[in-house]
Amino acid sequence: MNSKLKYGLLILFVSLVGVGFCFFNVMSHTEEIEIADYPSGSIKVSVIVPVYNTEKYLDECLRSIESQTLKEIEIICVNDGSKDGSYKILSEHAKNDYRIKVINQENAGVAAARNHGLREAKGDYVAFVDSDDVIVPWAYEKLYSGAKKYRVNVVASELIKFEDGTNPDINSAEYDSAKVSFHKRRKYQNPFYDMIDNTAFMVTKIYNRRFLAENNIWFKEGVTHYEDGLFNFLVFARIREIVCDKNPFYYYRIARPGSAVTEFNAKKVLKASTTVSKELVDNFDLFNFNRGSEWLVSKILDINYSHITKDTQDENDRKYFAKIVVDLISDKLICKQGVKILNWQKKQLDELYNIAYN
Image (cartoon, rainbow, N blue to C red):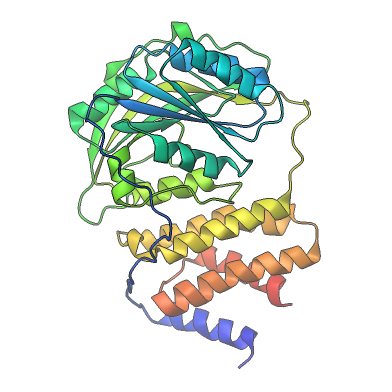
């Protein structure tokens, strides 16, 4: 049976027959985060800062963390093989603040740097800050307070984007306690549709360190894009309760319009997005809640479809990555798991199929 006929029969079968969900065991990771035995509360939040060639912004970033009103923090800076003056800046700050720990590693990417920081962390909760961004002074005091008050594993907040070259006034930011809400997930409730507004950013959240370790949640090393989204997908699929704090505490630096930016590399992005997609499929049974399969297919299409149909110019790359996505959805989800796809999903899948096999 040729692949085109096979694909057509699969779609026809799923369209005519309402197949139920089938759930299989999660494929376990080969690498684990060890649970260190540290006294609870001695360090409340471990702030992990991956650093790679950001000497222009690093001092400002570190000063904003050092100025936190929550003093029981540690600042773990992982120098990921920087070739500029970043290490010198880190060393100077470490001399003046005993809470700063500097770790050097050969360049292995941001995911590996964050994992390194996670393994060294001692705090009840962990947070992540990119080394070209800044945070308001009360950030971790308020997030930690919410976490302890409601006894949750995750507190999610908001961010503000600011242009490079401007100076955000983080010291005048005011906090509104009325913007804090507690959410408890009902049985089979979909957290991605009903509980959580923002799953893309992990820098706006604090996570219970022991929860991450016990569930073996870590960053997918070697992935250069969507690694933070994957991290959050694996977290939020597991949590039952969350605190959403609508106060923005994280200031996220973006390039000014017209400034020089890193060239967009569609092939590199697609290598990452298809790797993330495979990881999501491998963890299929984590999404066994209402409309979970719909969310899963939507997310796979969301992070791949436009890159394949619009961003990729090389015909061979288009075919290669389209085939990966088609096989994941048609073979791994529709055929093996009995997933029923929506009309708009079928339309995009058909387009990707035509690219892959015609």
